Image (cartoon, rainbow, N blue to C red; front, side, top):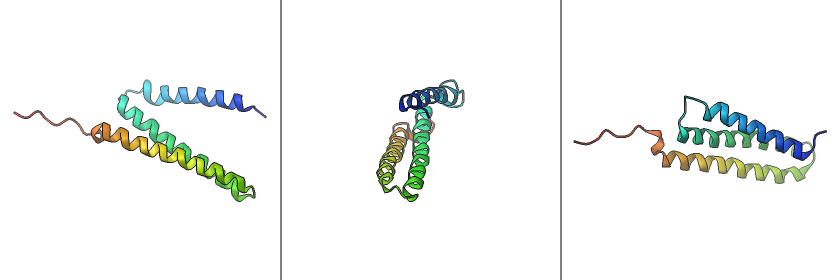
Amino acid sequence: MVTREELEARARELAAQLVDDLVVSSERVDFRSGTFFLATLAAEIGQHVQRRCWEIARSGDGRWELAVAEAESLINGGWRTMEMVSRLSNDFRPPAPPRE
């Protein structure tokens, strides 16, 4: 079995690779939309984490409901960040044409 430190290091490596592959070196997103994308990804991953914690809690270890609640914080944080990035980016609307 791997150690916590090994899991954390692997997660950091994968996160850096994902950020580079999906956002930094992508020609499809700019910096702001890439930031929104990452917040969305965090919320989606939080949902997967929460689902897994629920499965463990339902299998008989009710202590895992604490992890379910913490995963909810991750999901909410992702969604709040998405909303704020969207607002700060004018909901990704193109700039209005100049008035004459």
